[in-house]
Image (tube, rainbow, N blue to C red; front, side, top):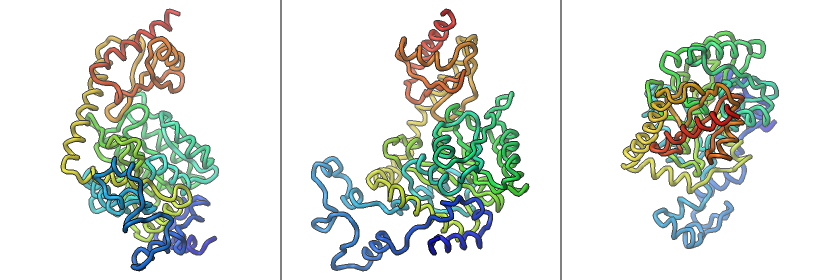
Amino acid sequence: MNPLAEQLNENIKAGNANVYEVLSTLGREIYFPKEGILSQSAEATANAKKYNATIGIATENGGPMHLSVFQESLSEFNPKDLYPYAPPAGKPELRKVWRSKMLQENPSLEGKSFGNPVVTNALTHGLSIVADLFVGEGDAVIYPDKNWENYELTFGIRRHGQIVNYPLFTEQMTFNSAGLREALLSQKDKGKAVVILNFPNNPTGYTPGEAEGKEIVDALYEAAEAGINVVVVTDDAYFGLFFEDSMHESLFGKLAGLHPRILPVKIDGATKEEYVWGFRVGFITFASDNQEVLSALEQKTLGIIRATISSGSHPSQTFVLEALKSPEFGSQKEEKFAVMKGRANKVKSLLDSGKYGDVWDYYPFNSGYFMCLKLKDVSAESLRQHLIHKYGVGTIALGDHDLRVAFSCIAEENLEELFDLIYQAVQDLQQS
């Protein structure tokens, strides 16, 4: 094993041996090279004042070489904030601003010990880093039965984790914390589990209330007390889009510092929150009471970034940073939030009107981009096919009887027609 990896592992063991225990084989072996091209280039940038012939970019007239056809479209930005490589961890100012944003939006983080967010190539990349660091062959990865399908690819197919599902909802249609608890405690013999918490949930658009959130935290604490080392990943892709009485914070804040056997990891980003999906700017943040553990995990994260994408898009990071710093950012975001909330409320009023109750129920939703219909008599896939080919309406079939509808991309004035068409399509299938 490389001596740098060994030193990081020793630092983690000294700070919190439980964190070392949850590292995968790759997680233990990975490190960020201190004597490679990047570190030597950084040293040269700081000290080589005459000529810097280190990093693989081209320069001209004291700045990065570039074509006018690009710069003419991006003339508001300095070429140095667009064309060179961004640092593997991301632009330092962006990391600082995002950390401040996290504190502002999650008061429960105040006084907690957590690291500086590391920039990822959006949220899937952040989840992939978690999988690489912590999931080995046969390790349990626990998340509900209603989930984003990419979890299976990321944790199951790529890393051969053992996927453990539990029902998302109880019969009373509240979050199934007892199911989570049972799934966790079933891993007592292994002594390790990775838990994914995705709120607002994709595909249902559900975020638990405060009491349910406490039950989740209690279940995780009980598992830790039972001797299970738990990596808890809060997939906060749709954070902030809370339309009703639910938790309005990430559970990351409640989990930080909760127990030595619980390692909280926050995955979030600008993609969904700030409506810049194609920019691919996300973040991964660790919480630990030990600074050596935080530093070592960051170095291992940078090692994975270096070994996969090298670094994220510099222009995208610049665009996000400038937007976050703009005095108009808050008001513009609130304006879009109101549009999204209006769409969600419209959907709920339609579903509660009694027009469609004979053919479907719906799962609770109070946040995010989506909601799910629970079809009574027809298959979701048959309905999806019929909708798209007869009515030109696209939806997502999940399992036998769940149909996901993304109200986020339908104007409020068109939502009633959308659900009328879905209803008509169900009736077509019933009659045939």
